[in-house]
Image (cartoon, rainbow, N blue to C red):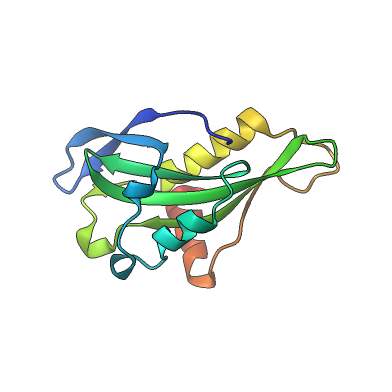
Length: 145
């Protein structure tokens, strides 16, 4: 499993108060009910090969604020060379109590890539994220990618 452990990270509440939340590998029981999220995270959990993939959660106590699922790809020589973000999702906007969520989830994935993947001058990227057209402004303006 490719993970960099657990972190406490600062976020702002709707009242603009800073609090610390936890960014760490998720457990099966953390997966939310499918009807409340766009992705069926319980089904994604079952499909995840935890030798090369992981699901990370951002949470406040027992409340899941966001999830990211990524895969690490290896060369023929078993050297990690690329991390691909497979799924990323925050709680629905009307239920979102803190920000940023996606930024911290992507930070974790990038840090994982920087810790495990070897960048080769022949490679195009170290981290790959395929996004929907309507999400691209979010990644550019809010996340800063």
